[in-house]
Length: 82
Image (tube, rainbow, N blue to C red; front, side, top):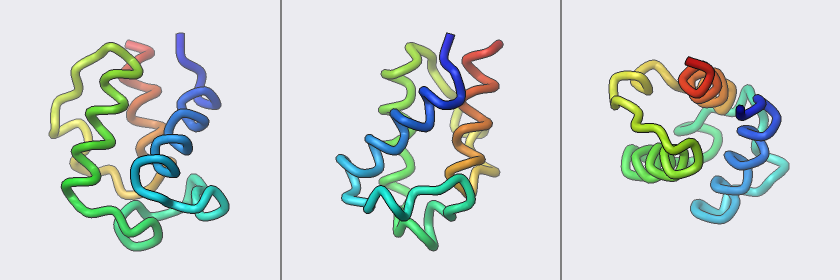
């Protein structure tokens, strides 16, 4: 089982390593596109990494309403808890 904290730690690592986002900018309230400067391709790459982490396939529509780091956490945590 993945805890919310574990998912946040992995997500933070991915954002730092893959997209060079400074750790101090990564908060649950941070907007993915505006604050962290991700684009739609980055978002797809991030979903792929999260799928590898959890071993689950995510449908694109499950991430349509995701806007913040907290939204990503909530969505991934809910999907792995199913």
